[in-house]
Image 1 (cartoon, chains in turn orange, cyan, yellow):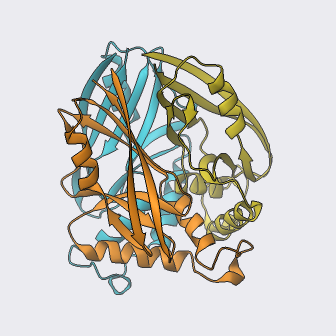
Image 2: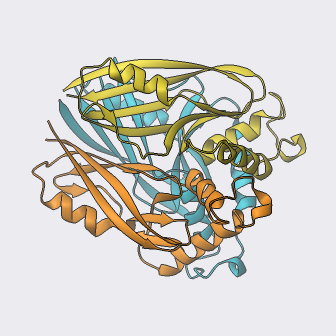
Length: 139
Length: 139
Length: 139
């Protein structure tokens, strides 16, 4: 049983979904591990991880719209406003989605459905560099 | 340290909760692994996984009702409407809940609270066959 | 590859966030495992787990406020009311957040961002003893 650690960095340019499936797959293809667990953690609390449909981009549009409506960027709604009107909504959206996802690797393939992609969901308006910790354990 | 993969299929008949705890336990009881990690992934983006109370069915009724109200099935709210009025709400509910859960096995028992059950939360109106990937790693 | 199980108990005194990061770190520091996976499960369905900012306490205040507004404690909204006006909202908040989190340990350090803390999110009004199962697998 082996363990390998890796970081994937994603430069975001404002709110929205950033597909990192191919980055993860590319790194996985270089590893010797055939079967195992892949634990992915985002090391931030104002962006999150989502597994969602990779077919119709309108799905991602509607998702972003839904979360923006559910968690409005209005300073009067929050106490924590010093970091900008988008910061507290970002924390809430992060809690409503995921900080981490745990995936299975079988025969060197990521166990995902046909229409499932891995997305970073950026909640901040400005650009950020987001670090996704990858930890593979298997044989 | 061993690894075993398995799929559990669940035929859903419309929206609601489908308890699969006994299916998972039944498969686990046939395995030699005594202690380990069980990673369960649903390979779809319009149904999800939830750990919830298995005592009072009203809890599941209220949960379904809450999510239906929070994410209405009204085409005018969404751009992605080609797959039916229930499809985009299904994706959103999926993001608000879980695509995957990671459980611990200790002394051949699933580490769960007394009142915790494993549920597939179906968000589509029509019937579907849902695949739950099970991956056990342990010794 | 070794496996170790542990339970951390937290006595809650009403709704809110309880930081258990130091309890988890303290236990981890006593273990021989240098690299591995830490799976944490809360064995209850009316309290949950959240990774969030540990810098400004206002973030936790706003998070609690948001969830209380999204899921009101009003009996008329629910069928499941026998356990108190806070019980059904507690189940819903639990589903909207997390029952479990899976973390990576690298070189004896928990892989977390600088501003990330581990929180128990208590949703009930009365005091409770909450059990967090810790399962470490690694070498």
